[in-house]
Amino acid sequence: MGMIRSIIAIGLAGLVGATVARAQEMPSVQRFDAWESVTASVDGKKICYMGSVPGKSEGDYRRRDKTAILISHRPEEKSFDVISVEAGYTYKQGSDVTVLIGGATFTLYTDGGYAWADDAKTDRALIENMKRGRSMVIKGISSRGTITTDTYSLVGFTAAYGAIGKACDAGSR
Image (tube, rainbow, N blue to C red; front, side, top):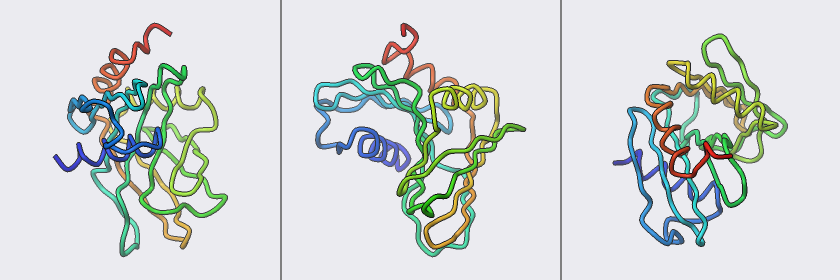
């Protein structure tokens, strides 16, 4: 239950600047192994997202807030497949995040405590690799110079991605 609450809170707060209290209806949550999909209505707009928390986190830090990776669809804004990483700390200014899936490497830009791909093409390539992979490693560096390595399971990713696509009509775009 802790992961579900974390994903809902991070997703609603990070993606739409809302809190669970602003949701007009109880979010619909489905669990797919290491991933969860969430469908909610915030300010009358449907959002669908999926997320996961790392199974393993490494780094020489004393305290770190929740970290997660999210993929969102916001159909009313015609926004699909947006990947975001919440670090649980503020990234070092000007630093990049590295995502490793199998033999593929991707670079995300950082802003505060979040990281994103530069463009939709990179988001789509990441998603395709996540569908085929078994695990994903995300490496970042905090504003204090701490290097972190988070390892995520990709088991359940494809099913969760299908669920948010169906819920937000992402296949019809």
